Length: 482
Ligand SMILES: [Zn+2]
Image (cartoon, rainbow, N blue to C red; front, side):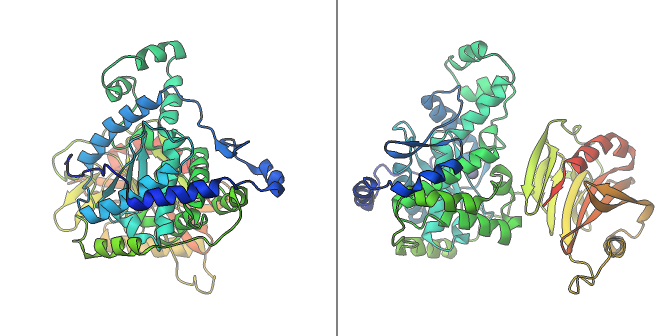
């Protein structure tokens, strides 16, 4: 699949004009009355003679190595995802992306600034080191105007110039070996990805290069907002888009929300930064070019179906590999939870499923069913409109629904429990496993979250339930509802 996309050699004509406009403006970015606001600056932001400056964190890699690592990882990404090949949309995204990147602080002439569009309706965008940026078709389609998609791309450019990918990798490496040894290893020639893989760093599609911390997210927000301002867009657009996505399309943005944990007070932080950037002015939100690109996208055939988690057949295969003891955090809408890092996150009908490799099995009559892992969902119980319902009755309502598709379901035990100060109900169930001839044990935990029932179900074949129990316990303990 490589070679389908020809990066544009030259930026668009308007880029030069826009850059010139930016240069004319950039002399008067300082305002005298904002010194007090400096107290609120995040650690990566500093105040220098020339205005705001941004300082990347600890890093063992050179910026050339950022590019090398980004290139090697991008080759993997290109193989793993369906890429959009429409020249009109690609030209638009590259023109916009390169113009925005040209306004980024800490830009480096080595960075590649290649923008590709993944042909998926999931809302996602991510950046690899060195300027390899991917935007999903779903993100462009979900953006209400150009300022919003520019905000996403500016945010991703922020990850590049703040070198968050190799910063994360550096931290992980430092936890494993002393600096002196690492210096020698990273100084060798050859594939960096291979060297890092030897040291246990996962650089595939679920690469450590994509796992951003909350503080990295805040920094990318700061840089993204800065870029939007310099480009003349409404600098609120970036944070607004992220908030809209989180609220309106949480199921379509699972990967995005997982790789880009939502910083606290995102909107407020952006509101604090904007006056530091300069005076408010007639910010633009849209251009006809965006509307044309969006129209073009909508005229193309729909994206190929989302890649399902590979299934195994119900009769044949052995159990999945043991759950990894290393947990990774998933931040969803209103909750966060840790899960073994060898499991996959998959949107389900009304929630999220956490699935070990081979944890979904093919069932002839009903398609695929989850035989291992955990699944999380929310629903409004009867009486929710009046705000008048009890957890016990609501849980019974859920059990009644489950019984419709699992007629042999049996409640083994039900007891109240304390879930970090919330009263919850734990229900242990026995049902028929989708694995042929086996029984399954499910632990259902329900609690109230505002006016909904929040339910978490842990699933394993009966014979393996005890082996999975410690993993289920750790996940439950890690659950935070907000
Ligand atoms: Zn991010």
